[in-house]
Image 1 (cartoon, rainbow, N blue to C red):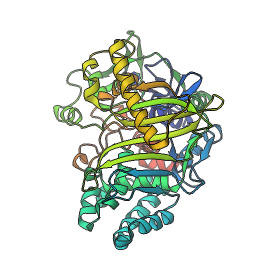
Image 2: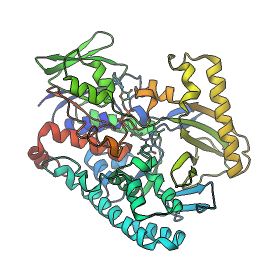
Image 3: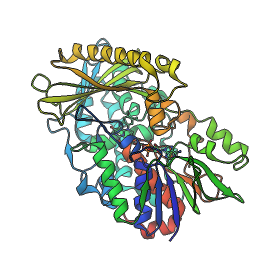
Image 4: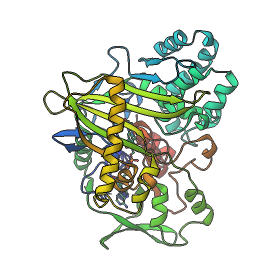
Length: 488
Ligand SMILES: Cc1cc2nc3c(=O)[nH]c(=O)nc-3n(C[C@H](O)[C@H](O)[C@H](O)COP(=O)(O)OP(=O)(O)OC[C@H]3O[C@@H](n4cnc5c(N)ncnc54)[C@H](O)[C@@H]3O)c2cc1C
C-alpha cells in the first residue's frame, strides 16, 4: 500500500483516486476550491443548476467506453443519465453561407446513419465519405475495445492517424460544405480541423455518434457521487487545500506544501492539473531545462464564454439535441461557433438556455490582473452586454424569449481562476498535429514519483480525461501489473 497525494479534484483527479484507492492505496486528493469537482461541477443560480464543463456525454451504452469506465469506477447506477437522439438527432448544425454549405446538418445516432446522412447531403462525394468512414469505424472500435491501454508501449499508437484531418480532407478533394460538417467534432476538443490529428477528430466524433447522453442530475451531484465512492474505498478529498509547492529530495518527490504552509509527505504525487501550473510548483533545478522548455512552450486550447439564462418553458421547452450555429470561411474551416442547449430546469415552467462560444479574450484583457469576485462593476457591465448580445442573436434563431432572465455569465478569466487553467483554456493542452511530439506521454515527468493526470495528459472531455487516469495508473503500476489488476 502506497501513500498517494493527488492535486486537483476534477474528473481527472477523482477518477485516478478511485482507481488507486480501489487497488488498496492510501489516497488523499487536495483541492484548492471549497467544493470538489473542478470543471465537472455545476453551480446554482435562482434555484437552477448551471453547468460548467459537462453538457453532454458520449458512449454510455453497454460495452461502450465511458460505460466501461463508469462501471469500473463503480458509479454507473449513481449517475442517472437520459439518452439523446430519440428523435434521430444528437446535434443540429446550422450554417451561415448556403451557397457553399447545407443550411443545416443533423448528426444522427450511429455510424451507419451518419454515413447515410452525409451521402444524402453531399451526393457528389460518396467515395470520399466511404473513405472517411473507414478510419472513423476503425477508431470507434479501438476506442471501445481499449486495447491501447493494455499495450506494453505507448497508450496511443497514433502514428497511422497522426496526420492532420484538414490535410487528409485536402488530399481527398473534399468540398467546403462537407469539410465544415466534419470540422465540428474537432472543435469539441478545441482543435481547428486544419491542425487536428485524424485520431482525435475520429475519437471525438465516434464517442458521441456511438450514443449521446445528458446528466439527469447536476454536475455538482456527479462530483458528490465520485467523492462518496472514493470515501467508500477509504480515500479522501480535502477541500480549500491549495498546493503551493511539490517538495523534492534527491530528484525524488517526497510530498507537497500547501499555501497555508502545511506539508504532506508522500512517495507518489499525481498532479491532475495543467503541466504549466505544475512546473511553477517545482523547486529550481528539479527538471532539466529541455523538459521545462517543452512544457513552457506548449500551446493551449482557446477559452470559452458562457451565458446561462432562464426562459419560459411553454414557449421554449427542452430541446433533446444540441444546436450549433457555425460560421465558416470559403474553405469550410470554422471561424466562429455558438453552442445552444435548452434543458428542463429545476424550476417549474422554466427552461435553462445555455450558450457557449469562444472566449473573446481581448474583451476581458483589462481585467487580466484581477481575481474572481474583485473585478468591479465595469467588468460586470461588459459581461452582461456581451451576454445580452448573444441572447439577441439566439432570438433570431429561436424566436423571442418570454420571461427571459440572465442567470449568470462566465468569462475565460472565471475558468482561469476556478481551475487554474492557463488563460482560461477550456480543454487544456492543444492536441494538434504540430504539437504531436511535444504532447506525447505528458503523464510522465522528469521527477521520480511525480506524474500527471487530468485532461492534459491524453485528451479532454470526460472520456479523454478518464482514459488519461487509467493511463497514469498504468504508468505507476507498470504495464504487466496493470494488465493483471485492471479489467475494463
Ligand atoms: C465550458 C466547457 C464545456 C465543456 N463541455 C463538456 C461536455 O459537454 N462534455 C465533456 O465530456 N467535456 C466537456 N468539457 C471538457 C471537460 O469538462 C474537461 O475535459 C474535464 O472536466 C477536465 O477535467 P480535469 O480533471 O482534467 O480538470 P479540472 O476539472 O480543471 O480539475 C482540476 C482541479 O484542480 C484544482 N486545482 C488547480 N490547481 C490546484 C492547486 N494548486 N491545488 C489544489 N487544487 C488545484 C482545480 O481547482 C480543479 O478542481 C467542457 C469544458 C469546458 C471548459
